[in-house]
Image 1 (cartoon, rainbow, N blue to C red):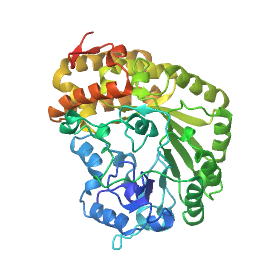
Image 2 (cartoon, rainbow, N blue to C red; image 1 turned 30 degrees about the vertical axis):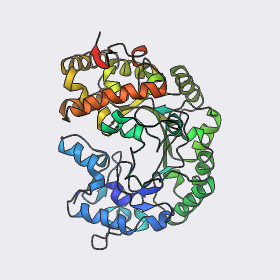
Image 3 (tube, rainbow, N blue to C red; image 1 turned 120 degrees about the vertical axis):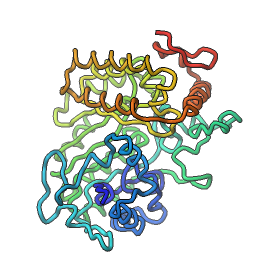
Length: 430
């Protein structure tokens, strides 16, 4: 059996579809069919996915975890492991009557409602940013950028999916969108409150939650869940929207734990370029203001790592250190033309030197344990060194960089210091 917490105990609301986890790419349930967790959890498509995993077969939508593990890297599935009939998280055991394996029927592939552990909610694509690793599916900022844009022949020939509007889509007829109203979100939470007593982890993703009106009412309704005092609330945010830090701190007090994952995703030098719509100064101020009034919420600053981050990797870690928070990281595996490993085609020696300098900075200033910086640096560097893609992906990156700069009305050379663009080619200058 390929063990996966999310397949047995997860529900994930995406752009008009519901799956098991953020990585699962298959459209298991459509929101126009149902949004209720009680009708989704043991839906036939959820059961079919569990059946395949039980038979040690990777479902097609699990390919990102499969790819990571094939390259001997830790996948998202392996964040939570099911061993000896126990579900482990932070070294804690469940009660014997409610352990996840015992609630799973390996004949019908249904799971008792007590098995639901993790729910991730997305309300809409409303966002004040248009980040270069995102798409119009997850960002209204992207939709605005592409509103009057028609892909030219070069974009089409190179299949620059973000600019064609096909990234995160399942074909030309896939028009699904995230559109959960406040009333629908409350209906989902009421169903969780009534039917799923062991929910422990609620994640929120976007769009940008602090830019959306559904977020705070949903949190207040979740506070009524019978397991709220044992619940972890986490959410992803750019922390660069206009929001009230006091209100946010107050609404999080109802839960056992709360965690904010701030998608920083760039160092100070390229922040406004890569995360178009925000400023480093606003980010830094909001983090400082929140930490002054809240000492119980864990804050992670996150690096979603594409080739752009690798080009200024030392600045990423120096800038993160300045924010004085714990960190984590993830890899932009798709679209492949901004996958971080493609930098190795033309700049392997330079990248390895940058890695060495970044590692030296971490060990000199932060150490091997504090803030998990070394752990996540090793994760990023290990991925880049061990992942092999086709050279065509590097050429596609050059096209994407050129076209996105034109649409975003910004200039790569104004932000990057180690590399510059000369005659539409990437060159090392420092």
